[in-house]
Amino acid sequence: MPCPSLHHRPLPLELIRTLPDTLNGFNRAKSNFCHLEAENDLEAIMCWLTEFKDSPGTYRSYRKEAERLLVWSLKQRNKALSHLTREDLMEYQKFIANPHPVEYWCGQRQPRHSDHWKPFQGPLSASSQRQAMTIINGLFSYLVNAGYLLGNPLSLMRQRKIMLNPDIKNPLQQERFLDQKTWRYLKKYIYAMPRDTKRQIAQYERILFLFHILYLLAPRVSEVSNHCMNSFRNYRGKWWWFITGKGNKHAKIPINDAMLEALVRYRRSLGLSDYPAEHDSSPLLRGLGGVRNISANMIYRIVKSVVQGAAESIREIAPHKAAVLQNASTHWFRHTSITHQDDV
Image (cartoon, rainbow, N blue to C red; front, side, top):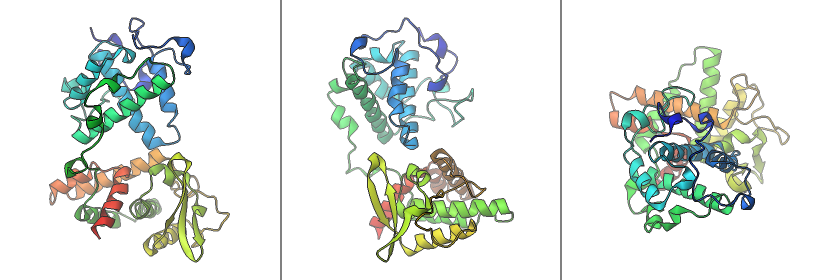
């Protein structure tokens, strides 16, 4: 029988208050060997997600896959996540390729607190299936290492390595990006954005600067939101972007003339000097008031708003390009940048 708390509609993790007491996984380790303060699977998942709080994009991606699996295990299998077997996970891999019943599991993107929120927008592509199973494998491995679970059921799957590793020879399975023509459509849309009011001008200048960064420097969105103006520095006669990236690794990225001009333009729009001083620890990208920084989540939403607007602007003349563009997100521009460099 389906879990009563999930009978009417699926719920995101933060709205699942409790788990049924009757669901107790056989894969649970003895509590005195566990290094997590977790009494149930939901709390264990939240402990795992806490590890990624400093990387908002990763956190959202991992949360999405964890909640999909948890809700599926309760609704479809009437099992605790800690009770899932190898056979269950094989069925789950089939399920994400075709979530059903569709009316329960799938719907258009909605705010997480909305009554119309759904875990899926539709069936996952082959590459998205692999990513989902890779993330789930990471979750189970973490819970085993923490002493919460006795074993990782994914490790028993004979085809696991094949399933988790993409076929790099198949171009249909590569990371998504914008081709040159679609990128030109997007640039044309951005340059044509309205600038009739002070607010529109501020929005335009911020968007122009943001997309220069995303395309020319190929950063992670967290790197854009976390860095200050003085991360752009003149070093030995050349301009560089000094960053601290994933895994607390330090790097410096060369700045070309187009990126430097975009930096100068954005700073002028904020009423600042052309180039940041060494002590300028003000936010790199900021709110329309020109003072406070904006979060990685806000950057993500700005990008989604722009690409969706651009998609609508070409819907009639290039519907296939519009379909690609509307799905683009911040991470796409890392691959767009690298792919376009390869095209040169």
